[in-house]
Image (cartoon, rainbow, N blue to C red):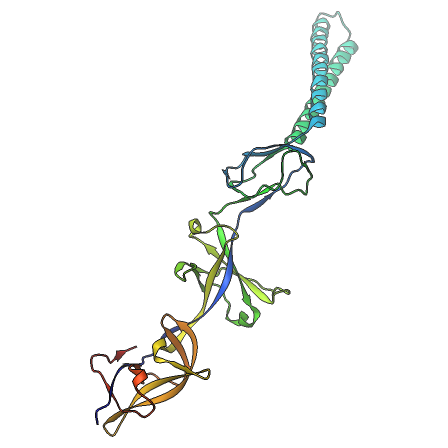
Length: 334
């Protein structure tokens, strides 16, 4: 009896990955929050958001009238102390010359030498005060502590800032990390070195990285475990960008059937297999359990075995027990 022409493939065991997709966040490993070390009114903003700066680049300037006045006062005092030291030095030199010719006593010479040391000590003390005041004044000029890209600048000229005011951030996008929160139910599958694929919005793999950190604790609020991977393709991403991340937990032998071969009826999946007995080939409907979709196929968890001949074409023309004729050119392996 002639059967209905159908296309079929012979199922073969293939390597099937156990994966899960999550939403991850790209973050910089070198993000610096810029806050002032002094308080006052902001008088100059020297950079704009998005500007790349190097270490030491001036970013902001805070008004410091009191500190500048104090520095000017100390500097004027230094002029007087320097004049005192110079006079004491001249007196000491004169006393030394007079002592050599016997025109001055040893006591008077020692008094002149002591006066010189006192004047020089006072000058050094004033110099130290100047250095301290200059260091204090430097806090009113905020500079970049490291290289990076300037983030948002939420402050404006004329605002009063304190040591807790956030002026901006500096992000170095050359060293990024991917943060992924995995549900605690999958904690037993996590380990260092697991592959993580970063996907584009269209589902294409744009980077493949490896897990280099697994948190030892569970986030109490979300009941998830944080894992991290380095992002070497840093030029494609920006800090705080959200991406699709697929974590590959394991690989195991399995079967994959084309999506077009499976029919869903009342929430269950069915396929047709070609069964040959007594020289006749008939289609047998078989219920299967499927897992996730891989490419254009379902991962079969039960209902089929390697070697089964799965009907993949002409399904709409047959039913359970219908005689079929497998087209020779169409039969192949999966």
